[in-house]
Image (cartoon, rainbow, N blue to C red):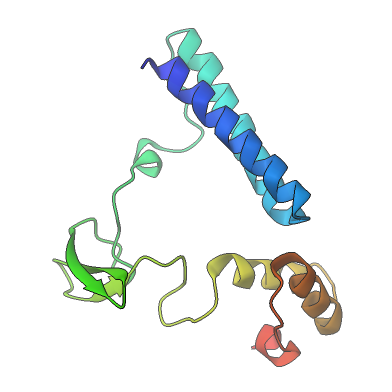
Length: 147
């Protein structure tokens, strides 16, 4: 499969994902997916001309696992715990799960980032709480957003 075909396939997949999120009324996610779709389309056009155009540095396209604690790429799989993949860093020795959450946080990264964006964009704590409940379907207290 050529570079162009790979980029075009990625554009189609992201477009479908954005449409799916739009139907679920997750508008913040739709915006992020739309931006990534445009970036991927630019890369596809550049590949057609035989150029390598990347908005992100080469390392950002790497699919390698990174340690949540020290950021090292020297990570090995260390089995499963409660049906979740466990990883161990060779540099710092920490064991961790890749679960889309910040270190020592129970809440998903996207929920935390969205809460902070809403609050710092000027929404009150109550309005931010209501928006998060609509977007993610999870009830979060105002105190959690403030902390």
